[in-house]
Length: 235
Ligand code: FPP
Image 1 (cartoon, rainbow, N blue to C red):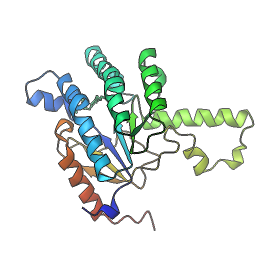
Image 2: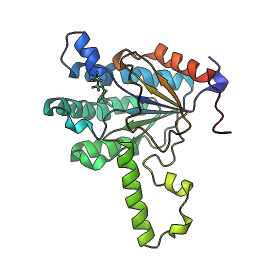
Image 3: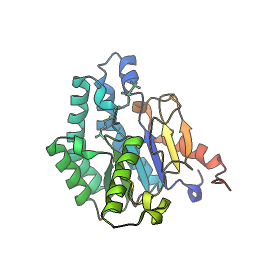
Image 4: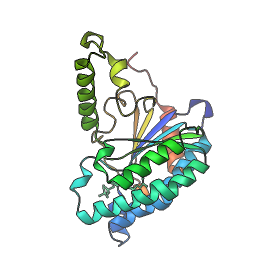
């Protein structure tokens, strides 16, 4: 691996958890549990050790609320654990944690945990960890447009001054550089609304590996493939 050509920001669409569980004869949520309790920390540590500065993990989409009540509850329980117990570990390791997505849909205790973790880790710099929760690209763009309309109406900006930079700075991902590499696990080759504004120049990497099996070696393989790409950014 060429350490001088590392992606600054890797984003992962974590897919295939239920198929992994099914293959093993386990209940569907076992895949989510495995990723939350064992997979994530390993991947984050590996990314940090490799010198990756930003990693974004899509853990819950705006559409995921439509899953069974039992599955949604189980994922919320994992979030409670993850953003408290695992969160403390992340802080210890020097990670700066942020959340993107519409956080207002989560219950108050969970919103508090996310706020706390963001605040307590804000001075860290070993790696930036971004959790995308209740995230949908269209939803983010629509919320951003509403925010901008409010700003225009309040006279904070003139509509003729709106430009890409201003829009970028109103998104949930404000201050986070665009992803260089977007990985999707489990063989699906679609974006499903992940970072549509931010990802236009990202390199995409699709792997058949299911998310619970996506480990340090798989991450390295993705980075090696990324390093073979010729990134011209339209030039
Ligand atoms: C996609 O696989 C995965 C999800 C919708 C949920 C992912 C949630 C976690 C891994 C928990 C994360 C926890 C923390 C603490 C951040 P899928 O269920 O769509 O799998 P399938 O494609 O096999 O059905």
